[in-house]
Image (tube, rainbow, N blue to C red; front, side, top):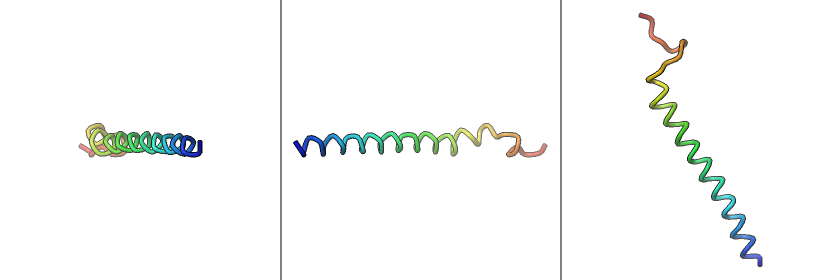
Length: 47
């Protein structure tokens, strides 16, 4: 019975870590690739 509970909690923790890692990859991609293509008012070069 203890092994069953242990495996369940390990699954919960690994799922949480996987979701955080996926969000981190998505946010990092947006900040490094997409954001420079569409600069805001603060980051625009003066023409």
